[in-house]
Amino acid sequence: MPPTSRSTAIARILLSAGTALVIAATAAPAAQADDAVTPNNSTITITGAGWGHGRGMSQYGAYGAAKQGKSFTDILSFYYPGTSVSDVTGGDTVRVLISADNDNRLHFPVDPGVQVSDSAGVTLTVPTGSKYKFWRISRTSSGRVLTYKSTSGSWVTYKTKLDPKRVWSVSNPSTGAVKLAMPGGSVRTYSGRLAFRFSGSRALIVNYVPMETYLRSVVPSEMPAGWGTTSNKGLEALKAQSVAARTYAARLRSTRPSTALYDLCDTSACQVYKDNSGRAAQSDAAISATAGKVLTYRGSLALTEYTSSNGGLTAASSLAYQVSKLDPNEAYLSSVSSWTSAWTKTLSSSTVQKAYPTIGTLKSIQVLSRTGGEPFGGRVASIKITGTKTSVTVSGSSFKSKFGLRETLFTVSTPAPPTTTTSTKK
Image 1 (cartoon, rainbow, N blue to C red):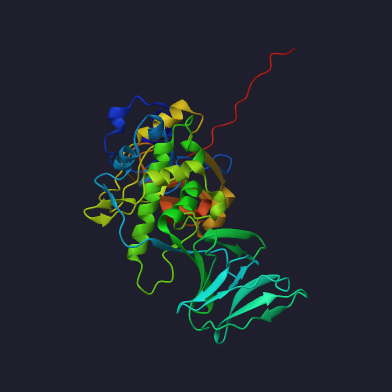
Image 2 (cartoon, helix red, strand yellow):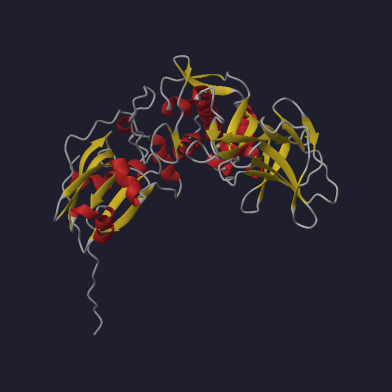
């Protein structure tokens, strides 16, 4: 499709569910570069679709598939072709870095039943008398020390038989969860135990938690649990998300070196893991319905990446089960709801010049190559920015990051001129 027609491609993909035969075909790469686009009134318009990297399962696409009555296995088969549903192996515990607790201390409130243990098995039940206002574990030159905040507000060392050179953990066997005070003053509750570990000069807080319990805080953080209500008909999407999240965690755990202090982080750099307050009945039901199920490819755990929206086109990679093809599930969803993945962003010439100061005054932007196929001819692989002094060529991913775009599935155009009307009033 020529560049001048690409701006209408996303509308056809997202708003028509009747193109199933075309959509089912694997998209072909664009054959030629787009036309160079010059600024109009010192601005350039970026029109795109999707949100994320586009690889693996589209979460909105999974929702669209579920609303059509497709099962979670149907959804997984579409987004991870060639994979099989298997049972997880490799142990029950997942180790998650609590990245926001970065003050090199582990603070926890006074709470009945809280214990501090070292890795040799020595355990202390923390006292709860009125003299103890708060507790913390800190790092010292000799290892670790337990202190409490007194009624006067000072921190007092509490002598223990715990080995300061071993890893210490905080848990509460009576509740199965422990409260963690964050540097900003808020308090979170995590299931399992919290370990105080050293990494160079830093101290890390690592949550040791059973896999299925871990998922109870991941799935509703990554996909709206409300999709799983009877009226929304999205429970199968939540089941697919449960299997994808479980597989992703199991794969990262299996590939970590034996010296690693944790398996995953708690942010979108891995997958979002919030504390127990975000759990929901619908996501819990989806996790239970798929308990222990993962995706494998030729006997090994698959890399089950997922994205919010692929914009109507899945992204390929070197993995056999990550292929580029048009996605009818997102098209269906946009045809029955007000949701759409299309987006636009206007860039001023000065913004582009500031980002690439060597070019001088911006003259044009040209997409040189793409991967995949429609919409827009595929994802931007390389793009050229030309100025009065020189030009620079960067990857689509770099350009996306530079300007905070949602996806690399976009086209570049000049803004439409403002509409003018002539008054008929006398």
